[in-house]
Length: 145
Image (tube, rainbow, N blue to C red):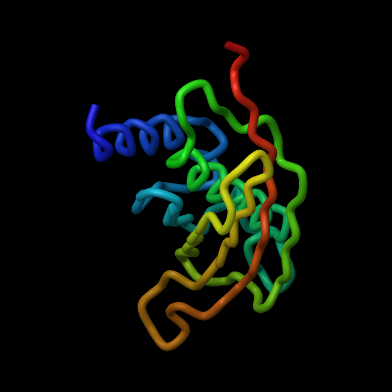
């Protein structure tokens, strides 16, 4: 299987999950160590301050983006055993119609660290403005041989 086919399969498997569908999340780009997701504002994800996307939803969104980015680097028999830590700094209320999450793996190993930017995705003056900055740490496990 080609790398592109594997990544397409990975994106489709994530997008099929009910949580992503309910939150309005789609996978826009995927490459080794990186994932770019888009989330459309909807009745499920909006309930925050100033009619913004809820902070807990943003944290979940960042963690999902991190897991997908990590998934691009997993070898045979390797899996995410669990999230060890999620740290989120909320910079600006997420009130746009589209919010973009870009996750980049900083360190890949038994403890894998991912940096995630959550930004305004709408075209206009605020496009690209940072809404939240997250750091996600996950532990990886390998199947016994």
